[in-house]
Amino acid sequence: TTSEDFGLAPASYDAAGVASHVVSQLKLGALVELDHPTSNNVSVNPDAVAAGTSLAGNPKADDGFPGWATSPSVYLAPGSSYSVTVALGGVTESANLCGWIDFNRNGTFDTGERTCASAPPANATSAKLTWTIPAGVSQGLTYARLRLSYDPVTFPTGKVGSGEVEDYSFTVVNSPTLASAPTADN
Image 1 (cartoon, rainbow, N blue to C red):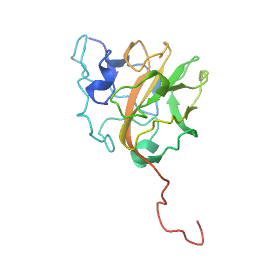
Image 2: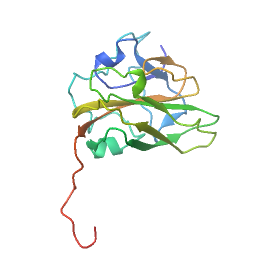
Image 3: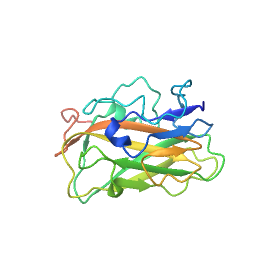
């Protein structure tokens, strides 16, 4: 058996192969959680949730970008850019960080839904991912995946020898909203 970390997105996102990382000191955020230590050669993600299930408040230690867990609604305007700053830990050499957002909510992470950060150097504690929002963005619950590894992370699926994979969910809304009524201070 190998100490691995798996994502949480529904099984359709791992149809081309389970996304897993061999657990090492390289991680997204401050924590990485060992998943299913007694499993051997897993070909189906044991942590996948049912399609349409929110990952907000999940008990798994996914903390690379807590904004998706604490702000479950995101306004994504087609043609604009959307950026997140991802927390990193244990980076001892140049690493690879990529992310996918299922903009069209078709149950897969497509090639055009991927973005990568400039290779975070040794000792980096954060890196920024920026997507250009496509015209086909669809309103409703969707999923995002972050992958950090010393290995290439060209695809949203597959096994790699280091780092961590984290999956998030959030709701895409078609107009910006205020969290609260404006006051003199805001």
